Amino acid sequence: MEVEQIYTGCLAQGAYYIISAGEAAIIDPLREVTPYLDRLARDGVQLKYIFETHFYADFVSGHITLSEKTEAPIVYGPLADPKFTSYIAKDGEEFRIGEVTLKALHTPGHTMESTTYLLIDNEGKQRAIFSGDTLFLGDVGRPDLAQKESDLTIEDLAGYLYDSLRQKIMVLDDDLLVYPAHGAGSACGKNMMKQTVDTLGNQKSLNYALRADMTKEEFISAVSDGLEEPPKYFPLNVKLNKEGYESLDQILKTGAKPLNPKAFETAANDTGALILDVRDPDVFAKGFIPNSINIGLNGSFAPWVGALVIDIHTPILLVVDEDLVEEAITRLSRVGFDNTIGFLEGGMKAWQSSGRDIDQVQRFSASEYAKLPSPNTALFDVRKPTEYASHHVDGALSTPLSQLNDYISGFPRDQPFHIHCAGGYRSMIAASLLKSRGFDNVADIEGGIGAMTELGLPIVESTCTTSN
Image (cartoon, rainbow, N blue to C red; front, side, top):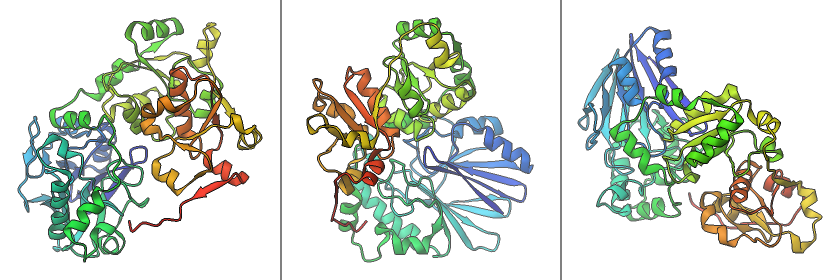
């Protein structure tokens, strides 16, 4: 038996590949299925089942395409209602893969169909659980997503989750491994650890939600408190995962269309497309197409697109290095943005050679910023509220990137102002968004809070501690 965790950092997502005695199972695959098909061919095994722990909101799963290409059935847990052919498991039902068994444990709470799969070896020993979004390392799945699609309240779902954890998971062997669907950085929880695998026993000692003496009321309060508004694209991804989606092969064929500067400009004007520049923030700042938005590929690219581009059906034109076109389109499709209509052939070099206008973002080093006279040092921190609360530059205002539209009226139009994040990735996204809205007086601080702290600028640090 072999278990492989296939972890995708930009989504903080773990898919799982299990093989035993010539058969395989895949749990929660990503939308691009070629890597899984390659593994099956490499190992010379047959895919017997595709297991889904629930209907995901933060990415589009590859279950449908993988089933079409392999004829393996898609398995969901109780209460799932997909609009395509699938097998709905009963609570406690067992599935044989070679010499091992996966047992479906219905664990509602994050969603009502949420199911954890227990791996049992050929000697009957519990080896691992694939917990989806029911149990993370250091946290549990947020209970506020599924309530928008049902008559249940957040408190109802949190109560179900409390029961699921205590009746189905905490009773299992302490030495089994916990393989969650997400890690730190995912919007599906609020307090996840950076590690991607742990023992259940260790989680019982570390995870606030698994405290043995916690009452249901305490649990409901703890998991419901401090939840940030989920990204707007989440419900649309649930819909795609339930109802089906277009083949990624077709999306790549449509999207990977090279457009010279004239055709690119015409396409932008005719379609109202978003010009998405996915280059490195440092490169983007030096020259970009006016009104384009920078979300760099070398970061949490897809989640930020999902969080900031409100309409998932928006046509997208890419400014991207030509060897990264397919990667950019694929990563957009992971979160349901399937409407890429082309990319700038020859990149910014071709655009500038054509004599077309470019724009720039003004940038200051931390030391340059520190030397500015105080009337010109209005400072906005676009990190998460929790990061700001932990420590921030004295006098900085919290304007988190995920809610930037809500803070637009607070940015001055008649004087220069400055923005920063932790290191520069998010602040360049914010700068490009603000520039596209007419704020030509924005400047970015290179190196963010790290550089300013190292320089010795006055920092306000939280003295509060939390139990979770």
